Image (cartoon, rainbow, N blue to C red):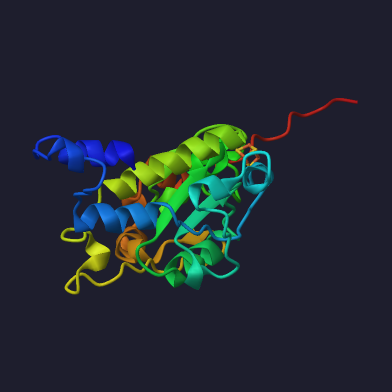
Length: 233
Ligand code: SF4
């Protein structure tokens, strides 16, 4: 707090004898200071990265130092979603639903190579190549898995981001800006992002010959089989 006070008071003359008794700040600073030190993450893990997240909350690393030890078992009491692990196409509808149920202001931290971009399972038939394809991410933590120290570094980065926000401009504090809800994707033969329905319909309506070279190749008649060579006994 001393550093913050020094910064705030650097250009305001204060008598020396009062320097320890006067605290000059702004509403934004107080508001953000209280929010950054009471971020409540959601109890939520997807794969091996979740083990590191659990370690981070245990006594050796002790998230209580950052006011983040109160992991909540419901999205309605959570400020922070830590996406820790492989995001499968089967799981992402649930993740989006949980995100929608979190109250504003809410933050998302993507933990590990899998959540950041698919990791070792990128291009896998059942894995989403990055949770940010569906929900907005505030902080990315690299690694496979990231160590607890790396996760703490990401959480500190999130605190620094919170420090920069102002209640005058933050969208979640303005009445004229409705909360952002992400349509829950539908899992059929593949994952369908409902925000891209128009694009999907347009592409599906195109004649097959206009859909690309691979479609043209598919429409070609199969070649006649070669007649079998005559064999002589
Ligand atoms: S990034 Fe590595 S450690 Fe984390 S969930 Fe993926 S495979 Fe597991």
